[in-house]
Length: 426
View 1: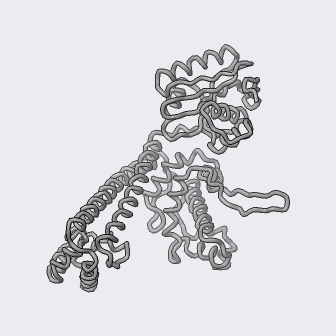
View 2: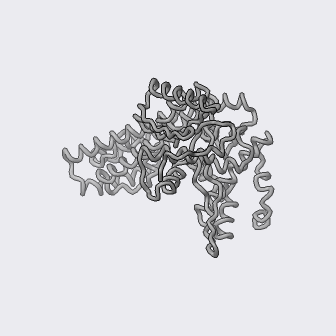
View 3: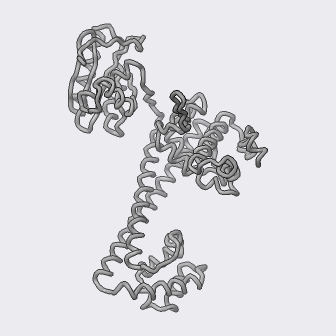
């Protein structure tokens, strides 16, 4: 297919020239069509080159009768931000296309699954010409900060998980007969054992029951004697298969490093969490309708993280828009007699779904807010657990949206006011 043919901007009634840009860390590849001229340029992803290129394109577009440029990219994390900042500062429009849409458009245009730096901006611009785009939201500063801190918070959570995996591997090597549950290791009692003996069974055995009891009781007065007795038994069993020496010392050294990494990540996460909570307080001063923390239901930290990812709730006209933005909207697959299972699209912001899933996880216990609802879905309706969790996630978002729109205080009875079927079964 000849890419130099004229492309009409039929979806662009205000004569805005669409410019597709494929973005990478070091390079930008531009594609635009003005009249019969196909423009394809490659520049460095740097301030001076971008500024010169956008000015040149703007002047060329205005001489051809266009009122403005619309810079269209596939989201890349950080690499497109410089381009968007400069474009916004010059008064140009900016918008996004989805990565999967670019992939499908490439296949339509070229009849294969190939991907190159020259192909992608063409596909991006073709999507924009058809107005298959989604909005580039310019979030207020407070929401930008919450979103950035939320990313840092999530990164620290990942660091904690990675460190705990290393701790587990090290404990398996140095203390093979330790049979406490993993939750115990990170409890006050478990942390006291690490502080006193680094989970070295040889050190525990050398100290003996009386000394171990005295040291642990000093740090955790409420630690049970039975727990200490079990610890001693596990230590005596483990020393039989883990001989002392330099290899064992090396494993203990590795365990201490992993433990330090976990504690550092915990400390950083707690610090970031406090900043998120403070920012949410600021956001609530500007928008009093933002939901307050609800004891036993949702914390201020969770609300701050969610607000950072969603942005101002005033941008949304309905809860369905929030579902679509977060990828929790439902999609169907039907063709002829075939009728597929209804699933969520997962086409929106992954981080929103992740945060909401964390929020609902403790709420589906039988005694909590959504416990009866969740177990009705899984027990009576025979819904899969993951699908039921999605139903709860949607319901939680709908609840928070209702609190925001009404400005009313939280009432558990109102959460299920429209669930007539569930109310009858419950």
